Image 1: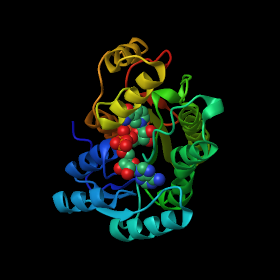
Image 2: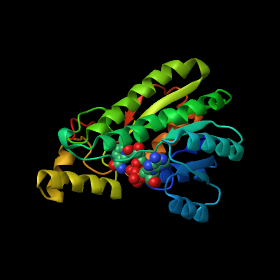
Image 3: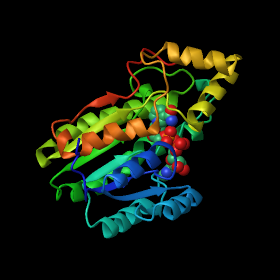
Length: 258
Ligand code: NAD
């Protein structure tokens, strides 16, 4: 299927590793113009060496002055903006609420939720000029269910869905679509670290923790960053023009997270 996204101007936050990297590469492989940012400057350099078509700016999305510089550079490189993918996020702490460091709570919300606001507010005036404008906010399966001992992460990811739904109504009259993507168990280091931390907290083995995690979700396999990227490409293409205000799970139906 031709997605007709050649020349689409795309900004993906946190595109140096993991899901963001897969999204950036997939857009670029279909002929889109892609700019990204990250706090991992070494990985950004590696990306520039392996794919010079993807340009980048070092940027922490929770730092508003850095985000301003990011948008200045991105628009200079791309010549405008059609798509913003708010992907940056951290796993945040795994701890009981009374033992949680309040600074860890703040940091998780600043990056996972406020970072999306910081980028969106600068993207909207640019997206108003586009003929195929959309924003994709990366939430999580944890954005729809409770997530014991990962409370700041769950609160931020529920917040992302609230942000998405509200913006889709606010920006619909400007022909800007806004959707959220909810990955669940994603193959990769980050998921392994989260399951290890939870297994340790519970005093169970990694294998048992993994079995427990899959018992909560209808699809019993890890999804790959590339599968997530495919969904996002379709959503942001002209073929996805009827999709807005949706929070789409990529891992099947998740009943709870333990
Ligand atoms: P990852 O840890 O593999 O990559 C995250 C990237 O974000 C890294 O390159 C890191 O340097 C960058 N980053 C961290 N803080 C940043 C900041 N303040 N500003 C800019 N960049 C920053 O994680 P991932 O799995 O690729 O996660 C991407 C998104 O998907 C996140 O929003 C995450 O919450 C969400 N998600 C991931 C999973 C999963 O299982 N991996 C599941 C659900 C949702």
